[in-house]
Image 1: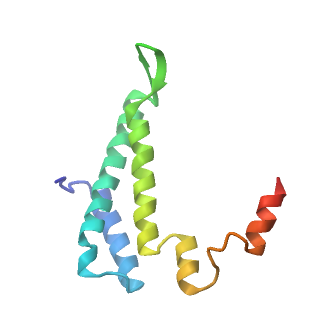
Image 2: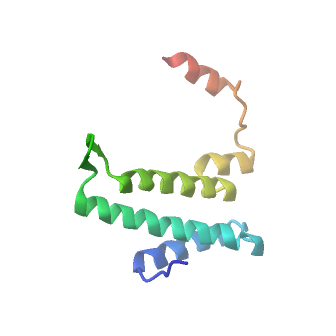
Amino acid sequence: MMKYFSKEIKNYKKQVLKMLKRMNLLECADESSLQLLWDTYEMYLMCKEDIKKNGISQVGAHGMTVHPSATLMLRCTTTMINIFKEFGVTPKARQLMLGLTTDDENSPLNEFLKNVN
């Protein structure tokens, strides 16, 4: 298990918990999902530092390749977004929860956006 030494992690954790509490979304069962979020964010920050230090690409046996930290950083971002979707804290998820929109593929907006191109 990772330790949260970084001030940035502690601040992030505090902000997310405050937001979830305000939205009345926290249950005891959410602890493991939140732990995954903290760990993923810490990995994201480690990848970010590694990319700053070593660059986004590297020279390998087959020429220039994407640095493994860049790939991992993308996976971390996807994981964090998915966790936020589960808690309903993305803008779209909040709209769905409040009934302001539907997830309907045939909604007028979705139809319009399909025909824009």
